[in-house]
Length: 283
Ligand code: IPD
Ligand code: CA
Ligand code: CA
Ligand code: CA
Figure 1 (cartoon, rainbow, N blue to C red):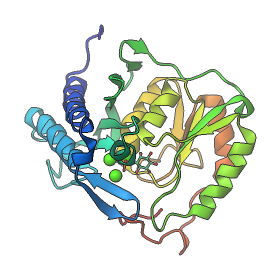
Figure 2: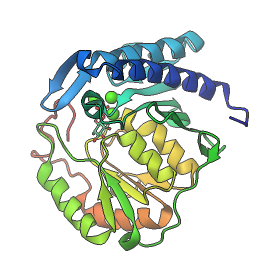
Figure 3: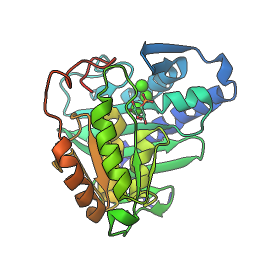
Figure 4: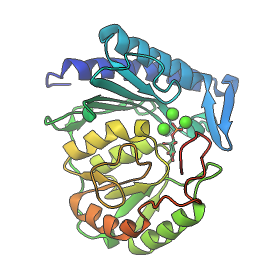
């Protein structure tokens, strides 16, 4: 890495690489990994927990006064009243990991007063480090990232994620899936939302949409996208998306076209939508 990085970003990178080493080691003997279910099709392994512990220990050793929001431990660890909040997904793509499908990542964001300032998404299979500091651009390893220049949704490659939890609203998703698949050049679903979003930043995809996401899936990659010149929001195109469970992203042109399709699907809280998913949040 050539440029000098913000000290908080450096700590996040150190934590992400340490978690990646835990994940890579465990992947060599995947059959030995203990898997538990949080709900139908919703898995957690001892590796998710170990990776999370390594990240939290690294961050709190450097910044003991900061808050922590992590997928497996929630808000249990770290300070409760800090203006700094680390938002952590220790292993994004657990289902892929369990099957040895090599698409998963570690995602770490630092928000200050609710706004993400530092971001790292680390892909331990490819040793790819996506990172950004607010106002200083987004990078993949040493390469500055820019979103694609494609103008028309009709020519675009779009990423997505499928609903999979009991209680997810499959019918609503399938309608938007059908509409977008008819209007774009191709749709992909590799299975790790943080990497999907980084692929928009890198210009591999022109756009992305998904329902049922959590802040730890999105937080880091959201800054990486905007620092690469892209846009990210909720289905109505509003910037207040982090805790809203659904997200659309893209280069500015394709983002606008996706928002036009998705705005009518903006979640209206109806009985059928508010059934709790396995993790206790609405789908
Ligand atoms: C999941 C992945 C997946 C997405 C799910 C997420 P996890 O995260 O990002 O791509 O479709 O909604 O929950 O549980 O493997 O960290
Ligand atoms: Ca999970
Ligand atoms: Ca995740
Ligand atoms: Ca996870």
